[in-house]
Amino acid sequence: MSALLRYQAALLLRSQRWLAPFLLYAAFVGVGVQAGEPVLGALGYAAAGLVPVAAWAVRICLDQEPPAARTVIAAASGRYRAHVAAVLTATIAVLLVGAVTVLALTALTDPRGVHPATAVASGLLATAACVLTGAAVGTLTTRPLIPARGWSLTTLLLGSLLALVTPGSPAAAAVSALVTAARTTTAPLSWLAATTALLLTAAAVALACRATAWRE
Image 1 (cartoon, rainbow, N blue to C red):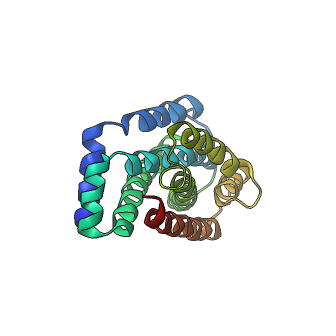
Image 2: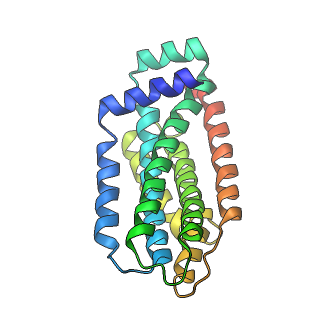
């Protein structure tokens, strides 16, 4: 699996297709978060933006190989492993961006009585919940389940929006907890949301992997 992860990461870096989602996310955070803003509110805002970024990154990794190369990799390592590696590569990349954002915002915004370590822990858990939810959306809205690019992009955007506003969504729960706590000095630790998002992503990947057997 490590070789597949390195292969997918190299493809992603060389393609430069990662620039669009990550630069848009940087602009989203830079414009939306002001110095002196309550740290928990800023972390909630930044975590919410990671849902479409993660979905977009997963779509990029699952669609970045030419069909011939995808066939060779699938024959050498198996379709399931190749599919999982693509999703993991995108998810890890966005998690790293999210972690750096959490550290930066914790240092630059107003703690409002929240200990920095607690704020970081709270932000990282919310980040994990949002990234994993976005990864699930991206997995379900691209090949092999939705191979058409137009429909794939449309459902990705709609799915990302629904993930942020639908009651019961792990991403919505984590973001709402942080935004609500911004008016207090108690930082929420969204363990349940992060765990639920992980299970949701695992189920989405399992479904997509099974679909590769009869759609590709």
